[in-house]
Length: 77
Image (tube, rainbow, N blue to C red):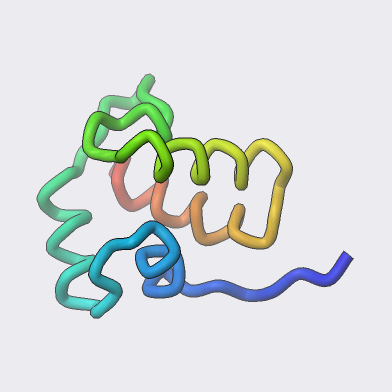
């Protein structure tokens, strides 16, 4: 299996969000901290499509899983 390294800006672009660093930092600051028991994909600010993407990437440990984990950590801290 060929894995690609994706960055946080890449993930934001994939999710249809503004991918510039200041915008993604603002997004994280605005939406954190998520409750400890809340899964990233269950956060209320995702669209259905975004939530499905995040859930699926973690479920199958896909190329995006590492950066999705990073976003999860940042939103829970």
